[in-house]
Length: 112
Length: 113
Image (cartoon, rainbow over all chains, first blue to last red; front, side):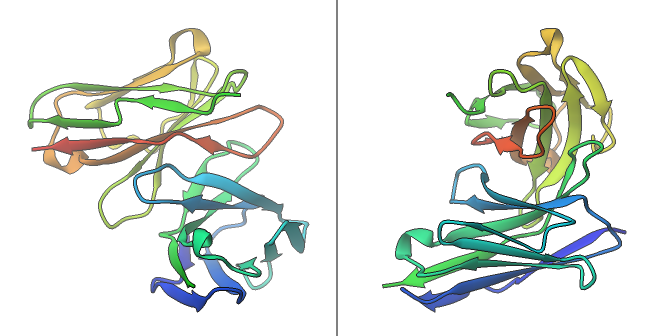
């Protein structure tokens, strides 16, 4: 069955450093992958989408890579700030339906 | 532009009762999705509407769940009768056809006691 794995343990880093979160998947060939941010008690907030034919995408301090051979996406936050502390979710999607399959998320804690 | 809204934000009901959740998608988004997150698990797909038609309801747990989207605008998800295992956070998301990004609402936290 389709499976998505994200770092199960929380990631703690110092302010100003680069945070790197991992999303690995098996038994699936997604058309695209989306990254979301979720704060406690709130819904997921869309951050970035990267398609299967794209290697890398950037938006401000965010960078996403997508390796369909390794079946892996990396999500980077450069010059991290305490306000970046949240849970980050990766989700795989198919262009046919848009149905998303989510990972469990990785909690990032940026310390001042 | 208003985002996806959901009502209520919280609902506490007893086992056997009925609850109806509502979702208002972003204006102009003809695709509407329901997802659910139960404690300790990942967010899981329930169903997908395109306008008023159910496109995919493969994630609906059983026939106690009924989703509607009359008129192709807002959607309701009714749970009748509710069971303890239905507790969780129910999210709604919408997407504009021709794009892939989905935008989520704040969720409804359902607690069945």
